[in-house]
Amino acid sequence: MRVRHVTAATAAALALTALAAPAALAGPSGAISAALPRCAENDLTVRATPSDDNDGVIKLSVRNNAAKPCLVDRVPTITYGDLDGAALPLPSMPHAGHKLGGHDTAYAAVRSLSDSDDADEQARTVMFVTVTAVPDHDGRRFQALTLGAPAGLRVWEPVTTLWQDSPARAEQVLQEEITGRGAIAA
Image (cartoon, rainbow, N blue to C red; front, side):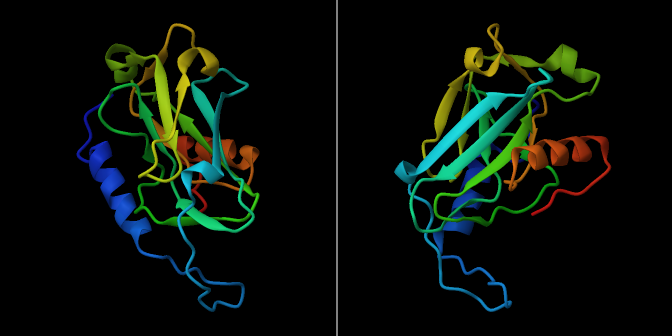
């Protein structure tokens, strides 16, 4: 993976800072609602599946299995094998909380390999990725084989969307950002 100025540890520390304090969210009337807790790791189900197009995109989801709403980070943290760094959000933005309602699911998409000319020469191959919705959680490890890459996932300049309300929206946002035709919805 290309060396980044911000390491995964630094990104995780920033995200933890954003999630450490109780968060207040604006309600429908614009009024600030009561503080929401971070989602407990055992209340979340994190999933990753390969894109139907076999284009190096991984579809992600996180489900809040609890009845009460809670917060995950607005950006999923995706790390590749033992490489330093994590997939960067498009566009680059500070970490903050994303409200996940009781029994709700949020979706994201991550592209592992950039279209740059350097990707073919510089890409690394890893045998697993780890995905977490809250940076201080351990997350869940997914083997390359289960993600449609039996020889390993090639990675160079990975990017991810923010959590979205549908899998189709997550893939659409990723495509729009990659082609420069849109801005990621928060």
